[in-house]
Image (cartoon, rainbow, N blue to C red; front, side, top):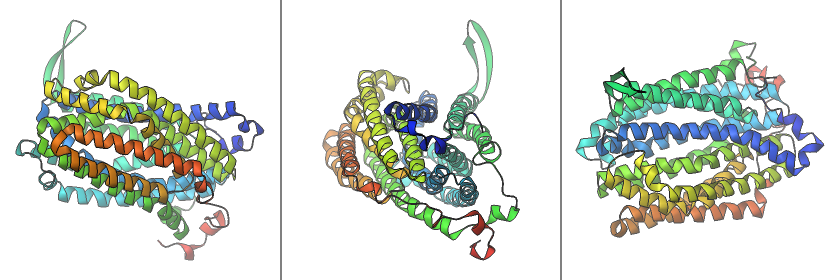
Length: 494
């Protein structure tokens, strides 16, 4: 076994796992690489935003205008990948690694096919999207270029996410963490070469010539794409050829092109609520962007920078959520519901605590965080106000993020999707429409803070009520694809 793989199936059958200290150690081992992976993702957004921000508010707004639509496309892909990754977590937790590999092979076909379809859709709508979102004429060209390159990069991005997700669900948090950090470093290097023109820079008193393409917003998109290709490609290679639990290839090449009805059905059960929820939520966020757009270029830039800056505070929550998904999923696979509940409680409390502390930090350093992105004083002032408004909601945001991860690990997806949908449309959108006209950008962020607090409280209520544990997805040898069934060609749908 690779030293980076955690053999959770064996740990779940050990008596020592019932001790609180053992659970905390396991949560920590899984959380810190996941947090590092989330940190690298957020830092890539920081890098793109800050480098483009040096060019002025207009180029920054070009990217900010398209951000919510990129989240929509990204959310559809991640929901689809999750439908297969949760199955892999349950199967590996139950010691059924060959079945997990079969699910992995099928997921590659589905996720790549979806990525290509979304890429085509993205390229078709790219010339029209900035107009639909109410963008000004001076930012439309940059927005079209940025989104077109994003659409072309979807196959690479989705496969990188799938490999990262599969490795995490197999218990390997280290490799995704390392290569997401590598991706972040590469993003810096490629952005420096692609965004800015050739120039002389002063390094330790020496003048060094630094070549550059001077592509601005387009360069930011290309830099991220190149970083994804290099680091994501290595991670995909590790998943397919080096991971102890996932990498054994099928002996029969036909298995790589075969899809099982049972696997797809189970993936749909997990994924469709997530996909619908993310489409609906991202559609709501696009509407929020449209609400902010009439407030001016500075408001668009401040809103985009504020969302990116806040990511530094909630990324530990998503890292802990990833760990919760793995621990709860493999606990169910091992047939230990009591461990699933215990890991759920531990990770939720940890997520709330960590994000409460980071909320305080964000409130205190809001102005400095915004100054990192832009020298524009108006954008800094608006963004500082937004971050300090949002800081009060961070603890309950942490509760919502981590509890969501717990539920996903259990395959309990419908209720979380309904909660997210109801809160963002019933609370955030309604309040944003009411408050934006009188309070401007402050009203939009106040609505967001109220909605996140309400959402967190509802998630905690559903978790404490406990019904989720009995309605969780069950993947057993009786209703899951077996190694013998894989050999029967009449059961394949493709």
